[in-house]
Image (cartoon, rainbow, N blue to C red; front, side, top):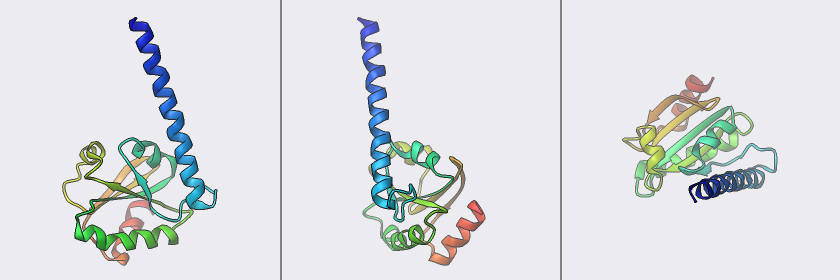
Length: 144
């Protein structure tokens, strides 16, 4: 009986991983014209976060919450940079109210927080609703 449960659990995990990959591929194709580089921020969750930041060489994640005024101020900047940096950097959005696991893992204590990933590893973190020029300077410092 224990062996059967273990086999079913493994099979379910494999199906979940396969479905996640399919969803990410469809999302990338729909948002980027099929070239794999979105031109707008991609919503990530506790489930998709790790595989997403490893998928692209340079990723900036906007950690936010719907009730946060400064987060709403930063959002247009992130959307603009996603378009301008398409093919160089991918942007994502993580709702910290709905994704406690990832928010805790990266010690998000204040929002908005931007997390900068290079080759799947966190290399920098900035907190606050910076104007576009300051965000660009942080990106250059963190990701080159």
